[in-house]
Length: 616
Image (cartoon, rainbow, N blue to C red):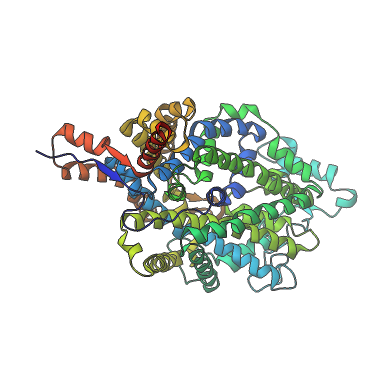
C-alpha cells in the first residue's frame, strides 16, 4: 500500500532564500519587467488601427477579465511558496509541465528579444559618432542610386492618386489628360505622371536600416555572414544584463530603480517636445478618434486580448520569480493591481508620445498618418528616426529616444532572465550551495544564449528573429500555457483553497470577482482566443520584403512552439504513470496534495503564541 505523506513546501530547501529589501523593490521590478517595448511599439499602433479611442473598450475589458487576474495569480503564487516557476507546482504536481513550458519559452525569448537592443545600440552609437545622424541623406557607402529623402517632394503624381481622384479602377488617356489640365498648372506646370523609376525611390532611413544595420539578405535560405558590429553590441547588452542579475535580487532590486524610472523621464521629455510640433494634433486625432464600428470586428477583440498578455509579460515565470522574493505577509494583491494600472497607463501615455511625432512626420512629408504609421520594429527603427529628421538638434533627440528603448528593453530582458534562472536554481539548489555557483551558472547560460543568438545578427538574421517572434513565445503557445496555469489553481488545487491561501498572506479574502475570472472567464478567453488563432492561422510572411518563408522554416517555427506546448501533456502523462497507487490515490497526490506552507505555519504559530500571551 502506498503511504501518503504530507508535502512540506518550504521557502528555501537548502539555503536561506533572498528577499527584496522592501516592497518598493518588488513593485519597481514588476514595473521594469512588465513595461517594455510592447508598450511603445505595439499598443499605440493597435489602438490607431483598431478604432482609436474605441479600442480602449475591448482593451480594458481584456485587462479586467484576463490581464489583472493572471498578474495577481502569478505574483501571489510566487509569494505563497517562495519558489520559482518549476517549484510552484508542488501544490498541483501534475501541472508541473506548465512550469517546464514556461522555462523553455523564456529561454527562447531571452535569445531573440535581446537582439532588438543590439539594433537600438547601433542607432545610439551612430547618433553621436557622426556630425549628423547617418540616415538623413544618401551620401554613404550603403546607399543605392534609388535613395531619395522622404522629405524631398517628387514632382509627379502617381496613377493611384489620379485613379482615386476620378474614383475609377482603370485609368484611360482621357483621365490623365483631364487631370493634367486641372492640376499641372501654376507651381506644378513642370509636374508629370510618376514613372516606375520615380515610384521605386527608397528613403535613406530605410536604406540605413536594411543595408547598414541589418545588411539584410534575400531570405532565410541565405544566412550570409555575421554582422560583426551587431554581434559586438549584442555581446555588450548580454554583459549588461548579466551584471544586473548575477548577484541576486538584493543587487537587482537596486538596479531597477534606474532602469524602470529612466524611461519615464525620457518619455516625458519626448512628449513635451512632441506636443509642440506642427501636426502633433493630426497624429493624436488618428490615435484617439473613436471608430465604434470597429468593435463589431472579431480581430479587434483578439488584438486587445493578445496585447494584454504580451505587454504584461504573463506565463514566462518571471512574475512568479519576482513575487517569490517577497515576505509572506506582503500585500501582493494591492501591489499587483497598482502595477497593472501603471502598465496600462504607460501604454496609453506612450501612444501620445509616438503619435505626436508621427503626426509631425506626416505633415512634413505631406502624407496621411496611415501612410507613415508602422507597427513593431518598423515603428522604432523607421518611423521615429524619420520623424526627428526635421527637428533641430536631431542627434540629441535620437540619443534620447534610443536610450529610452535600451532602458525599456534591458529591464524586461534581465527580469525574464531572472525568472528562468530562479526556476532552475530553485529546482536544483545545489547550484546555489557551491561557491560562486549562481554566478557561474548564469554566466554559462548567458554565453550559450549569446552563441545561439548570433543567428539573429547574420545577414539573414532578421528572418530568424521574425520566426522566433511569431512562433516561440507568443500567440497560441502562450495562450496554451496560460490556460493550463489558470486551470491548475481554479480546478485542480481548488479555488476555495486558493482563497484561503490568499487570506493567509494578505489577511483578508480578495474580491469575489477574481474567483469568477480564475474559474470561468480567464480560462474561457484563453482557450477561445487560442482556437480562433489556430482557425485563422496563416503562415508567417514578411510583407515589407515580399518574402514567404520556405516550408522548412515553418517546420522549425512549429518546433519552437511545440517545444514548450508539448511539455504540459507530456509531463502530465509521464508523472501519472510514474506515480504508484490507485487512480484515486494518484488524483489526490498529483492534483490536490495535502500541503503545509511554511509562511502559513509560521502565521499560525504566531497567532497561537499571541493567544497564549493574551490568556496569560
